[in-house]
Length: 362
Ligand code: ZN
Ligand code: ZN
Image 1 (tube, rainbow, N blue to C red):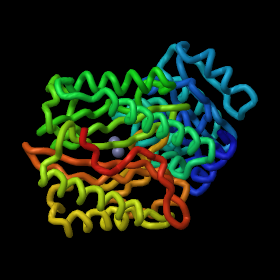
Image 2: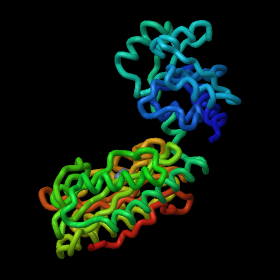
Image 3: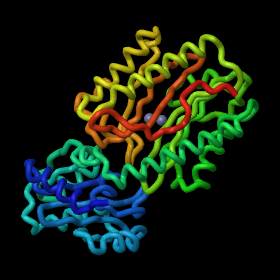
Image 4: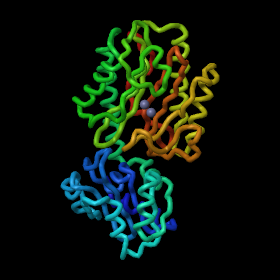
């Protein structure tokens, strides 16, 4: 991880802005800019202050030992505080000559109020500075995502061997997550979705105790996490024989998945990639059943920049890792989603999800 390059990039953003310091409070952003590996979990109490001269990370005693160890030989100093981190940061600001402090969108209203009372400087909102830096992955980041995607593929293969009518969605989810953890995943990238029968028409269904019946479609959306980096994949299978109607929908979603992936190319706005898959589903007569965006960036967070949806007006850069996940959701009946993880290249994309896409009936 190239922490010096990341810090220099934050300082370039600062130099181009009205702010002369940035207070980083988003935990994935803290992980990214410090380059501290395996130090902060999602619930960590941590923040960073970056100025032209200073690079200071704040945390509490729970993370002190590992954070100090990780900072050795880097430009970062670590301040361990039992007081609120924001108070310590405000004290540090005095005497730095900082006049305008940038803050991130993740800063809560109450923390913003504390900063305006105690910092003694002007505050200015910044827009996704670190999130934008995180879009293009370094080789070491892509390797971790690819390793997580590969374990996700192995997990799908494993689950095909154990799936049977009579299992509950919860039992399938436990089997997925247990296999991933036993094989090196750090927890899960996000709570797995296992949606059977009519539950599959809900794109983000919660896992229930419903028993899988013969002939049920089953949508499984899950991902491993390795070295802090996420994978994200969805497959819909049929536990039994598919109906003619299901098959028509499945074929349309698969065609949209292929069309979407074929449209991924570095420099293409996300909305244009989304439109290709959306048009493909519309041409097949299922456009009205696809409500969400085609995809999203994946990295330290399972949902990050760039957007590959109707709001994705910015170009998707080569080097980003994004999902391609068209779906058709027929309320009260069934749904199909086929989601792959791809790395954006200058002239197309390379697929990181290797699980079979053709309809599986079991
Ligand atoms: Zn997913
Ligand atoms: Zn996704």
